[in-house]
Amino acid sequence: MTNKYSTAQQHYEFISSQHGGYWRHDFIDHNYLYNLYFPPEDFFTHLTRHIHQLVLSYPVAQKDLAGLMGDLIAQPPERIVVGNGAAELIKIIAGMGRKLIVPVPSFNEYANAALTGNVVEFALESPSFQLDVDKFAAEAIRCKAGLAVVVTPNNPTSLLVPKAELIRLLNKLADHDCMLIVDESFIDFAENRDQETLEKEIDKYPNLAIFKSMSKAYGICGIRIGYMLTANPDFAAKVRQGLHIWNINGFAEEFLRLAPQYCQQFIDSCNKVKADRDHFYKQLQTVQGMTVYQPDANYIFCRLPDQAASGPEVTEKLFVKHNIYIKHCQDKTMPESDRYIRIASRTQAENRRLVEALRDVIGLERE
Image 1 (cartoon, rainbow, N blue to C red):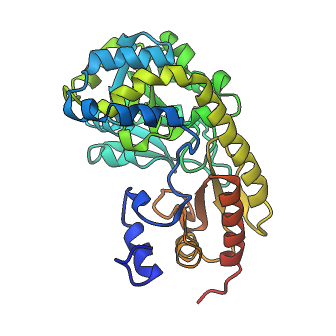
Image 2: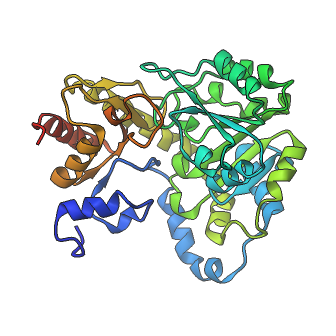
């Protein structure tokens, strides 16, 4: 803990008010969701060798960035818009003035970025939190939504919406002037990634746009890259209009130039994340009274035992007593939100420590 905080409680209060910069603080981060095993060390060596050029030179602009991303994901550049993280692209579409419908609980940024009065929240039914695409499509059509958002695997539930269900949803929305935004930021951690992604189907559905934050799977949160993929040229053009000429820095450009040579290392890293997560899932199931949802991403969604402290209380105690930080779901739109937590999978050793700490904290008497 830094000297700035005289107590662990004060440190927790500061950290829980932040949206990043965690690396400056000495705690185990089971909150943020990223691949611990990528990029490879070669990438950092390359950046170090070229640090002067990367800092002093202008990066390329959107057309070239789309070409670089297209080389990585095997897609034509005209279908791609590269953002300063997916958050930049989310902000652009949310500001288009179209009504947006999103299942909840989900990643809050879609609703937060939308214009006041332009968001319809579609409640996922507990305890399954599975998306009923028929009901979702019916509500999107009823409220005349221009944008429907599905995050898959979902955040915080870590549950995948099957590809066949998404295709049914696309077909239902096709005649209603509604773009389906499918956020696949965590798809690389799904068991059958190649069978579940919609990227190979993109040319069949002009009402489809895929969003992806590369921070998660590629472990590059600090250099901020995301992209949109769509075969709808008009929608792509509208999103491009919202970008600055140099919206991506030189470090991000250099990552895109080098990433294709690391394809096998990337696949191997995702497989290691999945193996750690699956082991973690089994360990969490041993915590008495806790409901543990089988994950499709690199984090696990849990419902705390009824007799245990609340999610915010457990989160605070884990930090203060064990120097471990997780995510509670009290800020999510869902029934009994204070009973749920989301825990990022890390190394197997760190995951074991988390399980032991969680048992200890859940076993504490309420004060």
